[in-house]
Image: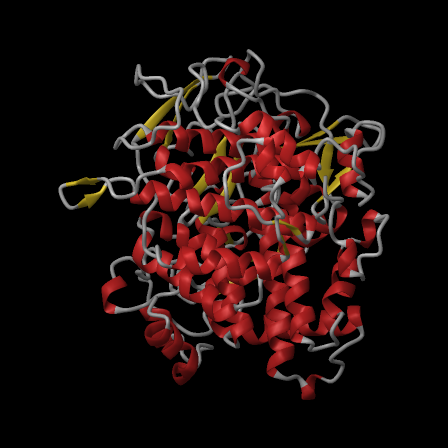
Length: 620
């Protein structure tokens, strides 16, 4: 532990100023050498220093979350040894992607800013630095959340460490997840409703192959209500999690709050899958899921991304990322692969896992028959999202390379609209409202769904659920009617599986039962699977609300895989859901741990994951 803090003191005492050549450098000619943050604009340099530290930890954050999940497999003899160790849960203290110091580097930069920033500065009656100050606190909370996710219990430090004497004279308390939440959440709560700072759009440079990249500065930060929701959700405090996700969606988020309909695109399926498509299908081309992650489109105009880390675009602009190369992309090369993506290598280091491919290739697709805009049909085709981000090439001898493009351009997505909606669904479900959680998958939430999709009209929304989301946690109200309209609200499952909603495609009238994607049969199928797989809840006649909640949670787990695959969050999601299951005790106090162990059994992990103490990396 002392080694980590010696490194912080030696390297980061005053390391918050961005360098002249860095991609986050500004146009100002002023260069700061002293810790003076009493001017209205100068602290932006220090805020960018925090963002630089965030860039430095992003590869590690991503790989710690993705490699230990169930969506990727290594290629023996090809995949980097450090990645293989993460995947097999055998990573030791020499693993290059296991460094608590990298997270503390972010925290120390944040602590330095928070300790020195004068927050009383005004322009007229406007607090000119409040948004920035709150955003830095939110980033610090995010970094602590990653520490306890990865290491279980960690030293808690809120003072900036700039000297060895500070370290030697201090006894830093150790905090687990609950301790971190108790320390940070009450302070952050006073800033609920504060939007992220917006310094305008930045031109962050050109790739070696000539693409000029712009990014909106607001999406470099984490909304305080979103990180508050995550802290509480991680700690099984579902009412508070719902409160802050709703605050963000209803009061803070603007266009980013609305799920874009990148739905059901069948055009990108490989040729061998076209025989699954019925002849009478009317392809509803309403978007392209893959376009959410294309460099040319995802920086300024894309409304989906809330928080992203854009890694430097070339070696002259800062620390480069290993992520594109791992997935077979030469982001730092010189020649375009095609008009939409970066140069490619012939060799990738990871491939989609067998359980993930089985999940996407066994799902039902919902569609209108050709010339019929009234009734819906369905067929076992697939979830199309994977085929919109993956490019497969058969090399013969059962050798197939798969290039997955989500991080091909050096962008890591910390939060998207889909992330917040799914997290809200997870919290609502565990609060006892699986109907509202399922609505987020099926239809999206708006007044029309709550009214005409209610049990009163033959739907699935309970009166209790409607009251909760309109009055107790006012997400759907008259004040938000323009934001959450039936014309712009879509269920997340619809993004990959066609027309899951009960809205009529042509006039958007809501007709309960229109789609065969309905709560009762879908949840029933999941209950049957859980019963068979885990030998619990055997009698359908005796199913309880707790059984339903657990089944909807597993549907959400599937949706996390389908929507957020290859974004670096998978293991963190699995751990969190396992904690929920353990805390609920529906099938015993360690059911979640056994569930997690079974999920990851195909990896042959070197640790016994039925023991929660074995979920973590060695702290170094």
